[in-house]
Image (tube, helix red, strand yellow):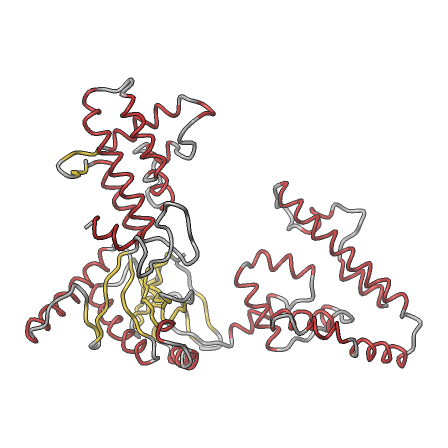
Length: 459
């Protein structure tokens, strides 16, 4: 029986193509993916072979003999010491596999910790969880979905989330508590669903506790993100049609900021894109702040004041880069009384495209340069154009002054300076802890880093 269970655990017939059997019907995979799957299957077979040998050897043993063997293993100091070196999640996973190995799929029972760990894996990648479910003893998706349904989260502010944040951050130092409030809109497919637990129909507009009989096609999401620590936590969401109004966004911000401050966190800024509604709401908040500071005789530093707390405004750098590129397509840039033109970038791209496989700009395609084909919503497309390699190619072409018109000579050197500047500027505001590249500013800002000197020069 134990051998049958192990064979069922393998779930792969050696006479069948292992890759095709493990993949969903009608799907394909690359050679690299096939190689990875074959390695996993090979390791799994070796493990199951070892387990099968152990089961075969102990098949004729009595219960008392098995208990004696278990006790001898429990007295193995090396085994216990190595086991407790594992982190909590690894211990939970290992216990779960050992506990469920003799049970059929329908007879498995899981603890809350095991379900939460499996839910975390499934949320990271539902497609990968489908494969892992075949390889290991894990809760089914239906079980995990039922667990998720027990948590009732409605649009708006949820007191339980802020209570959890408050309890978690009690032992944090000041540096860990520094954060920003990030908000953006996410596109949704309009549809209605009935929530049996709460006896409510979801899918209508729901903003600040007011439900409207209109289909929602966007969700406005608010998230807290650590500045000095890599943590993040969503705190509120709202369903809207198209976008929320500026007045509604002002009202929501005035509700969220005090709640965040009560948890003990220290918000330093608001981060969003350049949506028209967002800009209007921020402009009105700035007007209210300036009016209040003028009455109090306080110097205005460009921030907004909400709930007696000053917050700086940051527009998302990737969106700024896209907006800059979109304007540069049809308008020239005046740079230190000189002109930079998009035509220079088109010229070096046409010149480079004729070089075949020896291109100097292999990453640039027509979707980067051609005004009719550019993917205007992708940040990577704009970042690859405003790069050090593009600036170097512009400088090189201008230095050669070969096959170039006299009209373009006056702008190409300036275009190279502009591209190089925006490449450095984007790197300086797009860094991350531990990201160190020689000669680049794409790393975390410190008190003595080169970012401060560059920003002063840029201003």
